[in-house]
Image 1 (cartoon, rainbow, N blue to C red):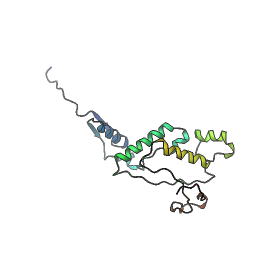
Image 2: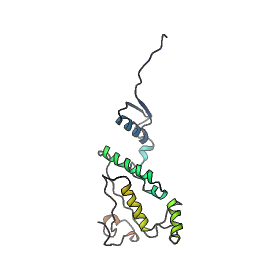
Image 3: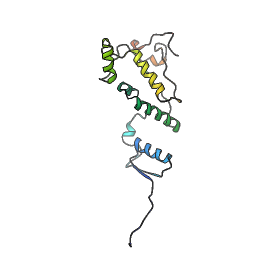
Image 4: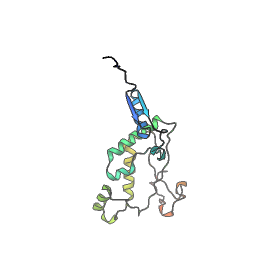
Length: 177
């Protein structure tokens, strides 16, 4: 038995790769009290992560695939990240213009269901469906930090300036300002 040595582990977890997933796993494990070592070949986030948009989002487009659980989990995680990193994450306003001739990009479960129930729409997205999707998006994750969706009159709001007039929402008593 000479020459045998026993050593304690250097860390509880060894993470290879300092991209978004590796850093996220390392952060989560350290937050749970584990000792963590992270190895990265180059700089942190020097490959794919560095080329990404760096946006946290809840996956609004996944609602067209009826991935409600996935969207809910993503929205909950977005809230966690916004609370955990207010110094490097902040809300960004997005405007989703609507035109009555907008169509689904591809064959999604939502577009197929709509074509059965409302065949005269011929692949177009009705305004009520967009509003319903945004309502789900606002409520699924228990939103506490970010403001909810609101309607804009794009003919009056600065966000409508670069858009063609066909995307302007007509003012109505129901529009939220």
